Structure formats: C-alpha cells, structure tokens
Amino acid sequence: MKKYKKKIKRTNNTIGLANLMGGKQAMITKLDSLFIVNPSKKYIGASGDISGLIGQYAHGNEVSQHIPYLYNYLGQPWKTQEKVRQIMTSQYNNTPEGYCGNEDTGQMSAWYIFSALGFYPVNHGLGQYVIGSPLFSRVVFKHGFGGTLTIVARNNSPKNVYVQSVKIKGKPYSKNWLQHNEIFNKGNVSIEFEMGEKPNYKWGTADQDCY
Image (cartoon, rainbow, N blue to C red):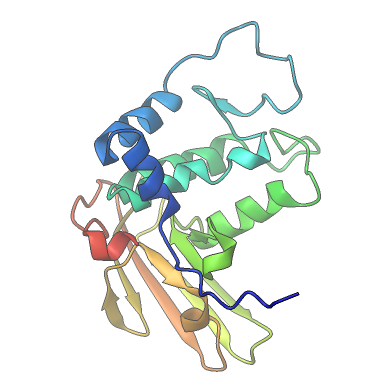
C-alpha cells in the first residue's frame, strides 16, 4: 500500500459553511436565531440531550458545544463572549445536579474548564483555541512542557463579560484565537485580558484576526 504523501491544506470550515449558507451575515443571522427562537414543546423531554436550553441551543447535547464560539470566525467575537459567559453562569452550579446534561466522559466539565480560562479548542486538529470570556480574574498553572501559563482578566466581573483587548507576554494581541505551541512551551507565558461592560466592536474582527 502506497503512503499518502499529499499535504492537507488547513481551511476554515466555518467560512466554508457560511459560503454555503449565503455568506457570513446569513450564518450570523442563523446563529442569532438559534439562541432566541423558542423550542417546540413536543421536543422538550423527548431526549435527555435536549437540556440546558437557550432558545433552541441545547448545551446538554455535547456535540453542540462548539457553536457559541463560531461567531469568532465570522468577525463578531463579542457575541461569543456574551453567549459563553451566559452558559457558564446559567447552565452550571455547585450542587450534585450542577450539569444541565450528563457528564459524557468529561465533556461537560472540559467545556466549562476551558471556557472559564478564556478559550476553547473548537477544532482540535489545528492546535488552536478560540477566545471567549474568562471567568476568573487570575489563573496560574504549571503544565507538562516545563513552563507556566498565567491568565489575568483585569476589571473582570459579572457585568464586564466583553474582551476589550488582549496582551501576550506584554505585547498587544489582536487575533481572537490562540496557537497551542505559542502559549504552552518551556517558557513562562502570560495572557492578559482587559474586560469591559460594553462590546468592543473592533478587537478581533479583521479577517486576519479571525482565521
């Protein structure tokens, strides 16, 4: 059997989907409606996965949990920030029934932990994390590459859910996603978020900052 040597080109699947739907704005409109349209009563309770509903978005269905982060690819990261913070604060709590769905080998927890840090691996194969809305004001942890990652969210609060700016190692950073090998390496890396009560409609919105 011959080895397949052709290089696979990395593409943005979200933009491809948006093109099939009629463009970015058409997909944004569909995403907006997903979170506000009331679900049909006949489907509620029909399956254990139909839980954690925000509009027709079901956070209890783990295969849907990347959806709030898709706004970043479409140039509207502030909507991701709003939705992610809403899900973290409304669909999780510190009781024995703190999940809106079943744990499903750890996915419910994994989504929360990543999102609370401020980013999430939407497409694992690309080695990238899409930025959301960090829940904690400061997190420091050591990782297996021999360094530490420090995440600071200045002016963070229940109202200040929107990212105003980002710095990595003290330098301004405009992309609304992070590269794995840039933040997890042998050195010490810091990510600083500046948070605010109102959306920043400029940060992370240029095409080169979205994908």
